[in-house]
Image (cartoon, rainbow, N blue to C red; front, side, top):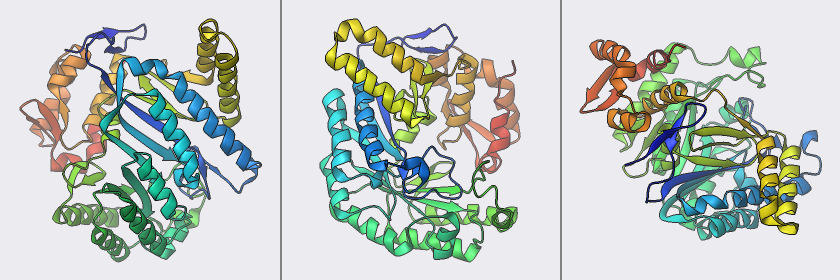
Length: 426
C-alpha cells in the first residue's frame, strides 16, 4: 500500500516509507543537432550555427555536466530502482560512441537498474553508424527510436530533415544487425504538400520494415518556428478532410499490420509499448538531466535551466565542491546551486495533478484506473469528475469497464474537446 502524504503545495506523494524500492525513470537530454527542422521548437542547437561556436568544447563540457548531475541524484539509489531510461534530444546519435558509453557508464555506477529495464535512444538516420549502433547495444541500450517522418524526398526537404529514405533504410538495417529487437519509427502527417497517396506510400514502406513500434503524429505549427513564419508552407498543409483520411488510414493499416493502438498517437506489437512514455502518462516518478529537462519527484515538478552556459557552470561548481571540499559540509551549497538552476512548478497542487492524471491517462486506450486514482489522491474519481464522466458516458464518448474509464472510438475522434472538460475550476 502506497503511503500518500501532502506537501506544502498540496501535492500528494509517496513518502518513501514503503519497503519495496520505488520505480524511477531517467530522461537524458542531448541538445545538439546537425540542423534544426522547420517545425521544431525543442531546446536544441544546430552545431553549425553561430550560437554553437566552439561546439567541440561545449559538447565535452556538457557531457561532463550531465554526468555530474546524474551523480547529484545518487541518494535515490537507496530507495529507487530504474525501470526506464530515455536518451533524447536534439540528436543523441550525433554524439560519438564513446560519449554515449561515458554517459551510460555513469548511470550504471550510480543507480540500481532493473534487469529488464527499457533503455531507449533517439537517432537521426543521417548520423547513425554501424559502430555507434553496436556500442549502444554494448552499453545495454535495447530500444531505438528512428525519426523517419516521411519516405518522400520532397516532404523531408520541406521539413528540413537531413536524411533521405535510403539513409533511413540503411540506419534501420544497422540497428537490426547490431542486435536491436525493439525499434520505433516516427511518422508525421499533415506535412506541407503531403497527399493521401504520398502518405499511404510512406505507411506501406514502414510496414514492410516490420518495426516493433510506430509513433504517428500530426504536424503541429508551433509559434516562433520557421514553419509558423512561412505563409507559403502553411498554405500547403493538408485540409481537415485530408487530415481525417490520413488519421483513418493510419488506424486501419496499422491494425491490419499487427499493431495495437495503446495511446492516441502510438501503436505497438504486443509487449513493445514504450514503457518510458507510459511513466509520463501515468504520473510516475522521473528525473530529467540536461538543459531544459523536467523532473517529477515526490510530488514536486521542476525544470532545469535552458541556458547551456549556466548549466555547465553550475555543474562544474558542484563538482568542485564535492571533489575538493568536505562533501558533507558542502552538501548544502551543492543543493543551493542546484535549486538556483531549476524552476519549480509552484502551481502544481492536487487539483493540477488530478487534471494531468485525466488528461494524460485518457490518451491511453486502456484509460484511467478509478482504483489508482483513489489510491493516489485519496478521493473517488466520481466525487471529483462524476458529472463530466456521466455526461460523456451518456453521449457514448466514455465508458467505464469495471473501473477502467476510457475513451470510446467515438470519444477518441474528439478527444481534445473531451479532455478540456476535465479542467477543475478554481
